[in-house]
Amino acid sequence: MSKINIPLSVLNLVPIRKGEGAKEAIDSMVELAQATEELGYERYWIAEHHNTSTLVSSATTMLMKHTLEHTKKIRVGSGGVMLPNHSPLIISEQFGTMETIYPNRLDLGLGRAPGTDQLTASAIRRSKHDSVHDFPNDVQEILKYFGPLEKQGFVKAYPGVDSNIPVYILGSSTDSARLAAKLGLPYAFAAHFAPRHMQKQ
Image (cartoon, rainbow, N blue to C red; front, side, top):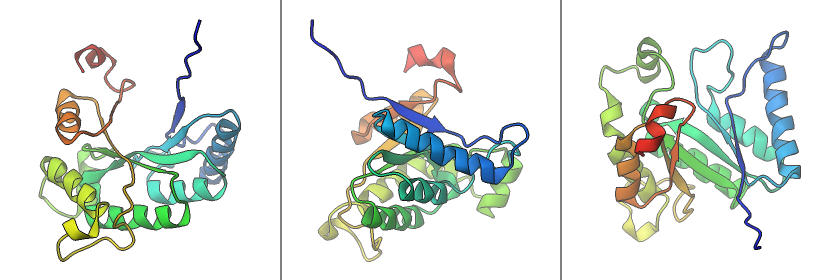
């Protein structure tokens, strides 16, 4: 009988446990990353949530950088960056910078939800424009920034050009699954949010 190796990954929301604070939560995040690396896990993804007193995962890229700094080989990614909260160019520059420092260890998971309530989402965006509907175009913009120099326009992500950082679409709906299929990208389903929809994906 042949042995099948299924790569395992971890998603961390960076929770604050009873009797602890934000610093302890971040320390625990690093300790778990180090432990899973030792056990041979392939990926360690960190979520993005805002205005949640029991979670410390609001500055996802900073937590990723901190995790990369304290691990050696495990892939570290966003599970995910909630793209409506961010400029595609800024995300491309941030991930391009991390890729320069920690080559071949990054994953960029992108979600279309704000990762919070609508009032907080408005405070993040500082705009009444509903950028959730821009998600497909924003994803393609990031793919362009990570691509070859000759296919880019006047604005480029430095560093980021030619980095080809793996991009994943995250979601809990068939809309995100269809977008991933259309763009030829991997899709990660949020079964913990919508377990009943898993059969429909």
